[in-house]
Image 1 (cartoon, rainbow, N blue to C red):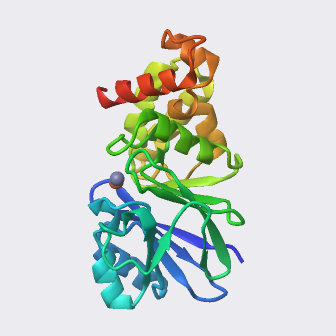
Image 2: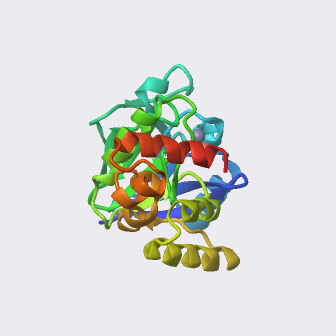
Length: 255
Ligand code: ZN
Ligand code: FE
């Protein structure tokens, strides 16, 4: 039975995600910035929290851990590399590990770049990827603790997943990401179409998440640093893709 997934808006632009396995009743929250809206969403659904999943140590992804654990007894699964800076972890996770929520199993990817310990959760059978602040719709996370090379390699792991994979990321940054992406590829018809869809969703007060990997591969400049037309647009034709990736990341930092 597939996981039911509910988006929970948190803080100003964060998203947490409730995952519910109706077969077993197990429920997880991914990246709870704060506890109260998560408890309210659980209450509204009649679900009981059993797992807390963290993609990385930033406060806007773990801020609700302690209160949620105290209120529900849920166990915390988080990056092994962040044990020194995420309190009270029950299940440390690293590249290649598997983690079950009821009848669904996630494969864990180590995706350093935004932070050194960042992980992503891929529920293959559910076609759902929880990418935290590594892969955003039309963007990627800032490089606080990593190099462009690390982030490009991390995004490469995620880009290799099937096009139908739904991407659930940590923030609603999509519309400003779209504005930047259009400066890189103004002639990309798929990007223009996605930007129009995003504008309509935001005007209606709706989230732009989930996106899917097929759309991201066609539109997200950070996944397209090895596309010759993108490299040429940056004056980096015939140069290694990492130079284009680094240039796009620098451009976004200053956008
Ligand atoms: Zn972060
Ligand atoms: Fe964040």
